[in-house]
Length: 443
Ligand SMILES: [Zn+2]
Image (cartoon, rainbow, N blue to C red; front, side, top):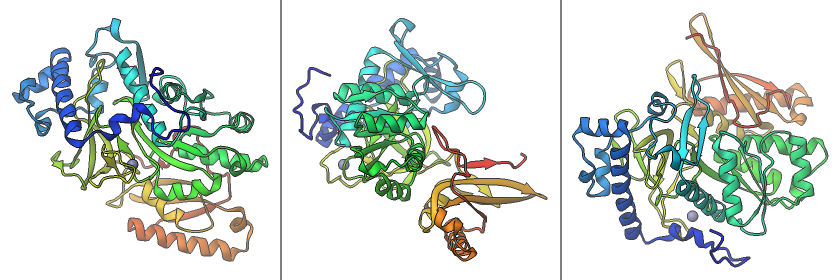
């Protein structure tokens, strides 16, 4: 990518050109790629050959984009069942890298890349960073974990291809992160939003005001977060907080990223074809309706996935974006169907609790939800940190926060919860993905 022309100070990066394709050209490109990838999957992956044969579908039956609905879905269980290399469509001598994500039960899920796949991944990361107005001259602190997790290396190669200076600091060691951020005059950071909050807090304890540093952007992802969380983070650090979306099964980070409008991540849909389905009936839903995001990798060589069910709940936004990109946006993913828990028959997402608590002054964005079962009755406790001012104030201030927060949560999720207000630093900080729900109910 380095041979591309790119003027310093120019806000348009040449690699971002596909973001602005005329819609009919984009759809024609998607159809062509869908036909090629369907054939590749059918010819090289036993799972797809078998499931398509079972449905009586042949690659030639894909004549229009709507024919994607004839194809089978892929789930995380399919990846687990074919562990480790059963879904590869390339011979091993063409696979140049594998990554894996930790499974909640037993074996991890494995993904693979050819040289071309790595190039595509870098290009969508360049498009992600460029959408955040980052470019050559920026110094990017990459605090995503390096290793089998896709976050670290994905952001790393993207930042290099962008022409920025990347600091491969990886996750953890917060004091060193703060030192590097100051000394190296970092202008942007990549990490989870919850880890960045932890970093701001630790910097404050050390007398470092992040607002006074050159950092101006955060590219935050790898966990669901809410708009309310962004409203908290931005003024605390005087940065713009952008939402990056991705998942290792599809490529890693860089499936979608917000532009300067911060109005939902743009999907790089020339490589990742999105659909929204009703998660119960699996029926396809039109743009504008909320459901489960399903993605087909249109260009992945080593491990093409047809109609992968992400479990992420979102909406494809039909309106054009003010930035001029023609690729569609989706609503930020603030909940996953996997994260949902059922308490006394009510479906609850951690993001609903997060939104409610961030509306109440005096709370800190550190919280945890603890589920227990007492005499066959489910109990939900929300532990929330409050500001030192509230905590050290008279009982009156605590009671005031408790009352407002109790009402806000009850209003949002429809049930009353036990609220425990705790002093700052009580809830364990995460260096990666925050653990919001502790379920101690015996199954
Ligand atoms: Zn935009």
